[in-house]
Length: 286
Ligand SMILES: O=C(O)CCC(=O)C(=O)O
Image 1 (tube, rainbow, N blue to C red):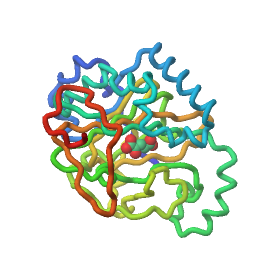
Image 2 (cartoon, rainbow, N blue to C red):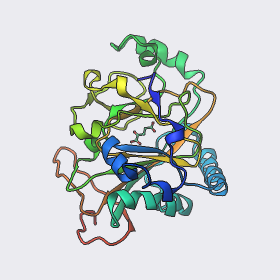
Image 3 (tube, rainbow, N blue to C red):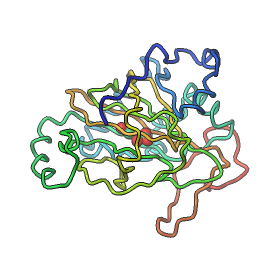
């Protein structure tokens, strides 16, 4: 990872009404590139309310927990459900997926500043066979190159992931990086990451030689903005080396026609799905 080009903020979208202007329009661009970034969603007041509510959870649970364990709490807290059903957010999601949309899963992903963790984990990681880059050896929380679809295992339709920023998410605190157009290559093999600190729950990683890292684009977001990406897009994020938290709310949506592939080795249930738009004539997730 590292040295990703910046997703140009001048290209970022400022109003949904403008999204379909220009040569290919926003859907055309999403289909072509597999992602869109810099979409403004939350008003300053909505952002402040969400940040205050999140701070309450941090006080209650502590940072070790809130870093990655606030999973599917959208049914437990009205303010979280309000984020997942935010009209501006759903306007974008339904423009891509069509009118009938299910919220599949959601999770807060926080990378906290980790001043002392570096020293703690350096020694452990030195024993592991990793690449020579210092980033790959420092053991700080990061997200390895992966495709969301590998984890979900769906057919019949796409998965769309939203990354809604509660903090500014920039290069130094580990913003999302994507490989534009990589969703056209289908599902790539994943293996277990050898590098310490991969935040992904099953530690999956696409082997380095299959990732065109020279094409990577950084997706910086200001707090209150979101990016969206296709379930097959190759993406990752570097450690937070700043003094600032990087907190995002990641939400997965599917059109109602998408269905889970049966995998006897990984039986999955989806107890927290919510129909957030339209109607569901398929009932794949009930
Ligand atoms: O938060 C991150 O850095 C990675 C998030 C991610 O992998 C995703 O949104 O699918």
